[in-house]
Length: 109
Image (cartoon, rainbow, N blue to C red; front, top):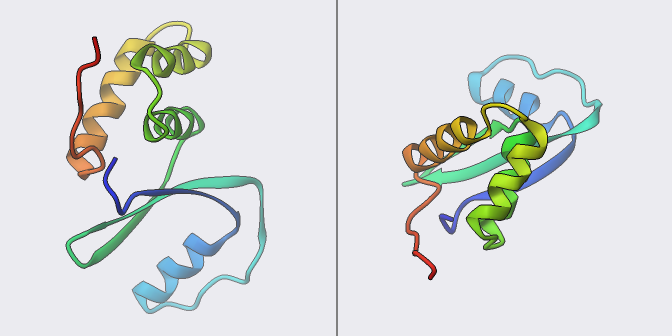
């Protein structure tokens, strides 16, 4: 994964507060999130970006970042999506490439 990419579990509505501050509007009151929100944070050039992750995307991305084999990554999705797991995996990988999260890959024999 890209060196600036981090996956965080936010227990507070930090993202909403930050977004409001960025947009120059009054921020919401601080509150806890139940369940916590899994959020990706990364940099592109000098700009910082973030977005919430769906639970399946978060599990898959965490596996990729720890170096899991692709078969393990697919098993994570298959457990959550009985039908369409391969299509979901392809969609997520494409999104990550477009975001610049995946800078390189290697084929293991």
